[in-house]
Image (tube, rainbow, N blue to C red):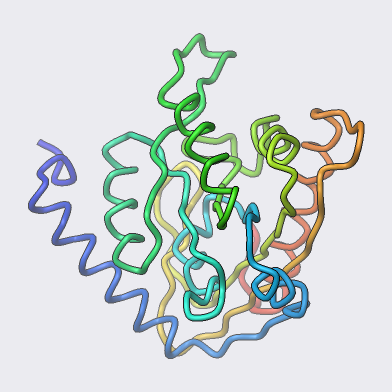
Length: 228
């Protein structure tokens, strides 16, 4: 039996991971760029979409200061691994909206994506919602039309975040997810956009994919983390 399928083991590991991440956040030397964009969003309050790639999920909570930013939830898949991640980030103050979108190319059925869309739009009426567009299974740094559609329907701003730390452990996962190590160097870079009036979903997805990747690459350059 996979250990993560045991609820008790899952809860214990999630507690350990959350404590480890808090320790790393506190000891990493962070560099911030364009933070004024994020500060403006936090001061204004209300709905906002928060976006970074799935491989940087472990760094995401650091970029959202709960003491001055609006409340936030994260879209996390209904898989066993997703349940573990949901438990870990909830201990860092970020509840989950559960669900993932079907992969039509593989003939998959919807896995809670419709409900996640409804719950996400409800969250965006007053608060923040974090999405990793290439999750939960990739391809790496890919973006379908789900994020632009949610931005179009909700009419809220989209805050893109590039995240990096070095040194870090790279997991043997589909996206080589990072787990930070303490006393290293970290970087957080923000950018802001909105869905353009009359914009095409596919074109916006392509532009936002490039933006998200560029921010991550810039953050990696600041920390010296090798790009994969």
